[in-house]
Image (cartoon, rainbow, N blue to C red; front, side):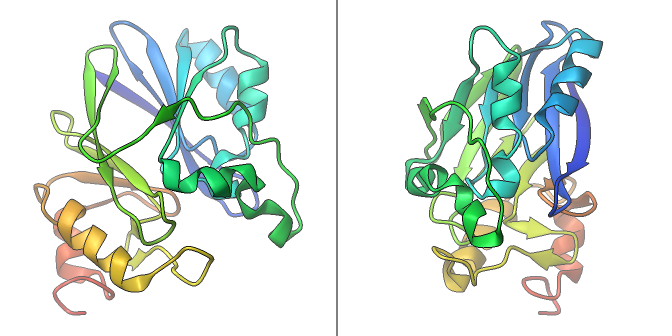
Length: 213
């Protein structure tokens, strides 16, 4: 069974997700936003072993805690990121543009791609490539758990911004309609900012891409 510990961290109030297979205690962090020591402490308290860092994309507010997490682990965690966001990762996720400096942590070691399967113990995730917010944005869909970790692609009542370098509205909209709205309506959406929502709700009420848009 998938267990989830959620955190809202850092200057952009970014959601980070510490997830684990409750049977094997194998754990990953999806978007280690900030304050990596806080995430690491929670994993240690629960007896979870962090072996992976999975990034929906490489903006600084989604990777700012990676260095501190890695510093507390031996061996280093495997880091998964789409290749199209490697340039952004090497630029500290754009942190200097906003007056911040971060430690981006270990080099990405797993290249994400459309349709890739990631295993966390007995829990399986499908990678869906969803550019638009950044060129390498991806989401992680756990079908059996009816959960999609959707990063900054879509939010409760909103969508990811496209005015930053590499963003594109038409691409973002296509990603949402192709890779999010094609999932079952009861799928939970756990995004990079704000409250949890569902696909059915956003289809009906999202003012940017919903039925009333």
